[in-house]
Image 1: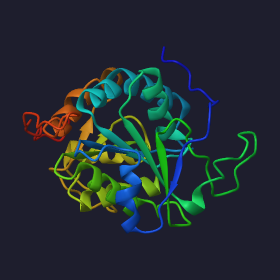
Image 2 (image 1 turned 45 degrees about the vertical axis):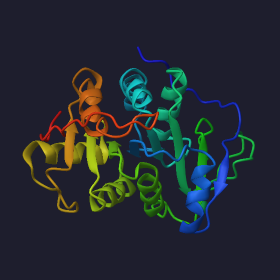
Image 3 (image 1 turned 120 degrees about the horizontal axis):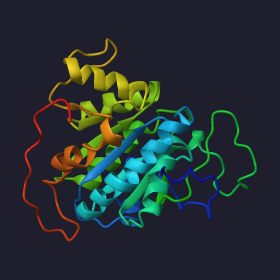
Image 4 (image 1 turned 180 degrees about the vertical axis):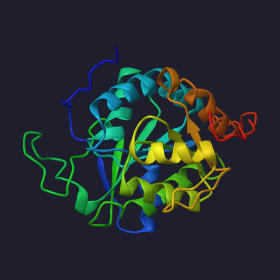
Length: 264
């Protein structure tokens, strides 16, 4: 059985304010080495993620995803709040004793005060920062989804000529916007089948190559990861997508061709 989802945290996350795109280069240089490296953009369910799905994801991320990201010297970029997939990846990294970079990007108006006591309830429409992230970039915006262009900028600046992939687990309307933005950037999207929400819709579309009415489907960019054995294929599927990039020491790694299929 996977370890339980924890609910307490040791200290507030480091919050860095970004006021314009011109700020990003210096802000990122303060928290992440500037060498190009593979980037995983993680999107999906937040407060609506089912507890049982969260536990399964925690097990998968700890055993399969975190060791892969560590080997690749990758960076993970997500929404940075203390809920759903963002909390799961932070806990999994901690439990796996991994050290790959984990950065959150959140719109200023959606964040509760990072210094507030954890017993203080966040205001409606706001969420607490996830404390185990290396840093949280607080970007302009008042609504959920305003952070999406900034996440894409961050992912592009960190990866440069290294590969980047978007991983989707669960999710609702904002996640759909995340996926659309990733496809617009030409970024491959991996959807975890059986995790619910948008991820299940994408996985179903990958299986029969038909797009949901509200999603511009790009068959060569959207792949489903089967739920069999706790998403056992994730490591291979994601490794094929990210493994042809740049190693943690800056040396070019051997290119690995994309899978060329819609289901892993």
